[in-house]
Image 1 (tube, rainbow over the protein chains, first blue to last red):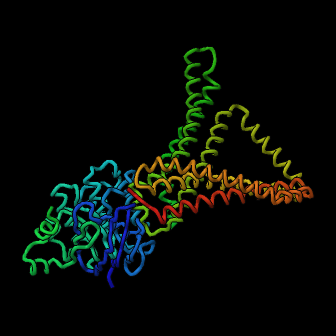
Image 2: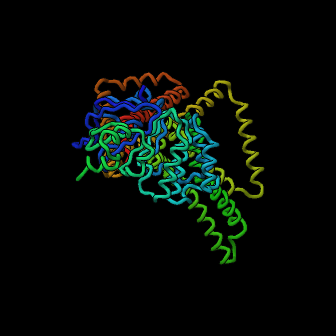
Image 3: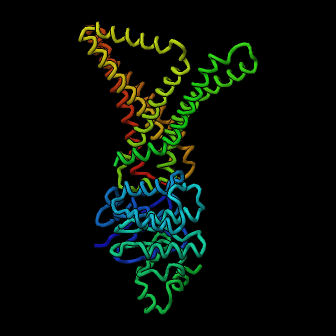
Length: 231
Length: 271
């Protein structure tokens, strides 16, 4: 059963159609790149999967059900912005995630925070922007979820932090789960992807495995992306 | 899950309200000392004493203002700003989110009133104050013992009805702000401006609908219903009055609760 499935999914904001009849299915055990230029509808799709938006048409299912309270306990979501309360200390953040998510692995999170040199009593507001993003990612990846939805996890950070983030994702996700990484920085994520979905102006242009792209097209995902989305 | 939401909501708000109460009690203690020891022939001590008493006044205004600001700010910042991305993806329902906010706000409103009463007692405290207080309590309880069972029962029920009315009024008071914020933040732009517009729009609509309802009921001679109060004892009439006020508070709160739930469920539009 797909962990994320859309059929004819449509979302409009006023006269603008952000998603237009999107249909796709993501199976467990895959790392999928949701790739497209800025404003292509990636974030809208992820918000719909999280129940943060309601669709205007079509159907979206997460682990077999509509997004909502039940699916939230199965999905680990990294928003594109820092959403963790900045007044909390690292310890309070661990308490928070531990209280609400039964699948939260506190020891794993503590180990990663310790590796970054973050003291349990340090407040999030005292951390740099990059460290906050790392802490948020640590919380998200410390869950043994069925689906990880990561919205622009490597956007706006330096190359060293990008490597840290990607290694944290690969080293900590539940292997039976699917990971969806939304980004336009293809070259950085290509090496970790099993599958890609190209999205443009709210429509799915392509869904394929990375191996098929390399064999059939004879080019990397990055090169194909540049060709498809050439201005 | 509501219990967990309440735990973290109290943790988020307590770090602000508890130090405010501490300041209030310390300035109350200072005012007591200023009133008893400082005000006198010395100009410097007089100025110092007046400043401390003024600080106590500011502290009272501060806790009242802060409990109000915090009620709005927690809903706005925790649910409608960036933190909303975390909160609305927790495995909890919209209803639990709303209840956690109204319960915590109401508890802080009540705690603020109690803290101000405690601070006022501290200011009034002087030699013999405790003896006078105990005397008052003794007379009060002696008076209670002389009451008939029906009077004691009525008094207890009045207190209960009044407490319920106060709590529901506080809940309804918070919900009218939450409804306006939720509606305003469903818009794409100028979210706070739209929230203010919705707030005044709701007030206008409710007053208009309320006036129409009263006029309509009057034409239907509904208010003859109150003629049946004539046969009631004063004690029973007060009960009926309090119960009617409770029903009104429930209806008022339920309207804003429904509006808040509708916008957060169907038209959530985080930036």
